[in-house]
Length: 181
Image (cartoon, rainbow, N blue to C red; front, side, top):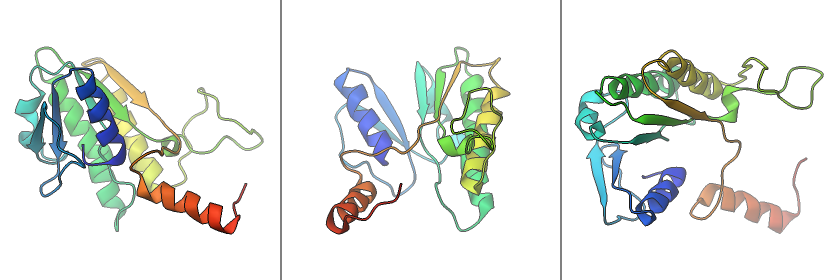
C-alpha cells in the first residue's frame, strides 16, 4: 500500500468494494489513506506480525520487496525468505487464499545467446542479485504450489501516475533529446 504498484492496486480494490488489509513496514504510511483499508504493521520476515490478518482473505497480493540493498543477504532475506514465510503462513490456513506474487522479469534474465526473445520454456538466467533473489521467491512458491493456489507475475518496467522516478527519467529525455535504444 505504500509503494507505487501497491497504492494503485489498493485504489482499484477499494473501488471494487473489496475489504483490503495491507501489510506496511513500521513507520511507513500509505500514499493516501483510504476508507475501507486496514493497515497491519509488520514485515515479511516476521509472520507473527501478519498471520492473524490473513484469516478470511480470498487473495493475498505480495508486492513487497527490495529492488536494491547494501548487502545481497538483505535482498534474499526479503525477496526470497520473506516470500517463503508468507506462503507458509497462507498455506497453514484452513482455506488458503490465492497468493499472487509480483516477481520481476529480472528473475528470468535475458534471452539465451543467439535469440532475440525469451520463451517460457527457457530456463532462468538471472544476471543480477535482485533477479536471483526474486527467482528464489518464485522457487519457494513453486515448492508450495501443492498447498495453496499461486500466481506469479513477471512484469518488465512498470510506470505511471505517482511514480516520481520514471517521470524524472522521461523528463530528462524530453529536455535533452538523448535516449538509448
